Length: 103
Image 1: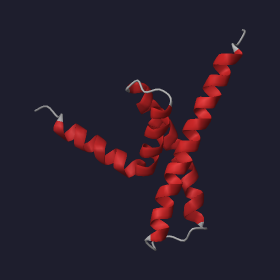
Image 2 (image 1 turned 60 degrees about the vertical axis):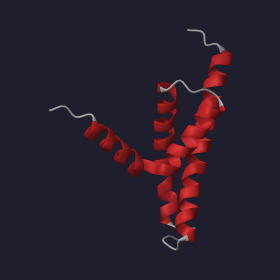
Image 3 (image 1 turned 135 degrees about the vertical axis):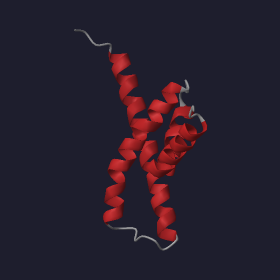
């Protein structure tokens, strides 16, 4: 099986960009909570943001693919989704399901 190096490079670049945007989004949320006095900057909460950032990077990237975004739009969406976090995504999903239920 022969791989096209340009396709591999493009895939790795987009993955790295999405992951970086997710980390920046979660870091922005962490800093906001630090400024409110709800967390210390250096602590276990900062370490626990890493898996959340990775997960939200995948969620944001999938959402960007679903709505056919490319380039910087994808990175912006990943950062925004990562900043909002899983709780906001769950809330939006529940609201969507509530509005679209059939009886």
